[in-house]
Image 1 (cartoon, one colour):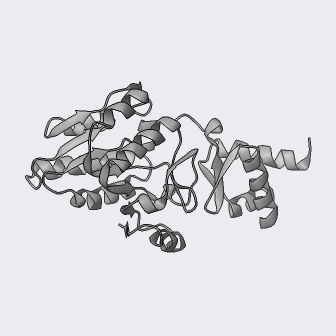
Image 2 (cartoon, helix red, strand yellow; image 1 turned 90 degrees about the horizontal axis):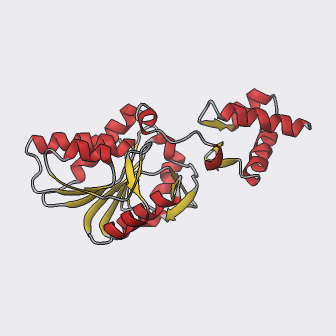
Image 3 (cartoon, helix red, strand yellow; image 1 turned 30 degrees about the vertical axis):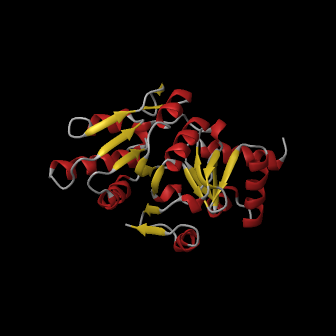
Length: 258
């Protein structure tokens, strides 16, 4: 086995236990130069084993641990709550909104439920493909649950039937999560079913609002479904690198760090 293969195997094994690795971490891990680390990143990307993101890599879709809503709900909780608290003020009376699935949107629904219960919003209609979102909002407002193929690990519905159903509606706003936001590839998802559903929701909305914690920015995922220019508002964390934010502001009209 060659030295390069050994190094690649060490990187892949490390990524099984750590979501992402950046260049400096690999330099320390393997005692190599930054140029060697970047070359290893490039080789692994060409083999389809990793995805390059801003300053580092993550496992490609086929090599990733299965998605778990419950596990992801415990990550970056403070960021997600801050994002949700800001984004919920973007909703107005009589809005008809689509709310995507995912853990940031789950926090958004908690914040929305609190606002409705306090009487700060009236006559809001919500469509969602998420069982988690539905459980929070259905007792206090009008919610239409989009059916289709149920995905237990995501606690949501997707697929052909979901796509057909959502095409019956138009929205004043849609609130989307993402698996990655890349400066060149735009909005990205880990699977085709998710990508196709949110693409339709965005096209049928007057305004597209994306909620993304810091782990999603500068990151590639499996499939690209919309350019950044289609986003009206991006709400993200205060901790995001300013270099990324400045570049995003060149393509997105409203970028808010909270």
